Image (cartoon, rainbow, N blue to C red; front, top):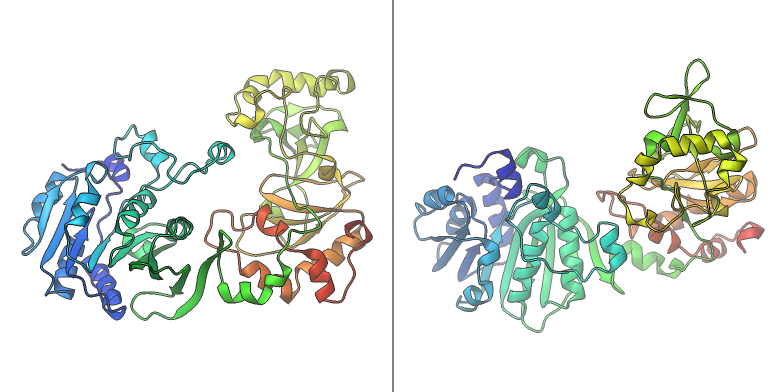
Length: 481
């Protein structure tokens, strides 16, 4: 079976170089891994099998499993390895692993593809549908029910090896490796030691994503909820230690222990910017000739009542804050009726109705059973004169004071978070607190900078700003006391 581009995506078919396989095995030897049985669940052409046989020549049982018949044919040429053509999701792994002599080593490079990607290709290379992470309804709505195939695979194997003497060493996207650890720790799998080694995925696979080797050592009645992170495989240097504390994943254990006294809940609430999911209609700019233009290129003449200068994450990162667009905000509070716009601003109403088909087709379920043209994440706080704002997407904590433009409050889109403030002075005082070394240490204990959205409202709201002010011997603005 020779795979086309879609087939390569569906099966995550990106072969691992022999050199990288050898580096992985060298790392396992440094960790004193000495298996009597070796398993590669998705062996491809057998690069890991070859490297493992070189690194552990006394190992008696070496098994490879692969769905691609052509790869199986090539891998069967490897001496002292038994290779079976089988779909991972149809294999009885409990039965297979039960028969193996301990210590067991499971290693390899499972597919880096999500279940939704495979589903979009109408692919069948998926596990049986189940809520494997126990996500709730809101998580499913917001996309958290989507998962990487490799995540499901590793948790499936760890569950079946828990209580055995074994090691699991797999190449993963770093974000997936952390999810696996968090889930395995929460489920109390018997993991005695975990180590993570960063790899250059652009060099190895041509993939623009943070990736790593994750190694989990399993032993009966042994549990450790910490993982040491190292810079690379060849010359590993200790970088940090991630851990699970009270069900929450910690990015830097030492920073967490130094700043745990600042852990909230906060006495002030960070808010997300406004979500509308239809930028072509709801975001407008001013043309060179002074006319309003929407994302469809239409020239508009609208009342100013529901138009507000707006900022996105990227604009918060610029030296000078200067809104380039306006957002049409039809509501002042969640669920507020919008029909009054027809009376208050007839041109705005006519514009919304004319583009109602686009707004009605917004796919998110948050708009269902709400007044027509609703937005989300809006409230009185959205229209505060001053705000302390931060981007959710960029790789730095850059708190900015955002003030009114020509007497109108600036609104933020849903890539940003903010605290509403009464004045410029209050905003500046908060920025001084949030930019302190104490606050930076606290935030660094939780932030994974390679995440898609490193900064979240949950993170920001976990800092007790009152305690921070007390530690720094300063006063909070009166409205925050």
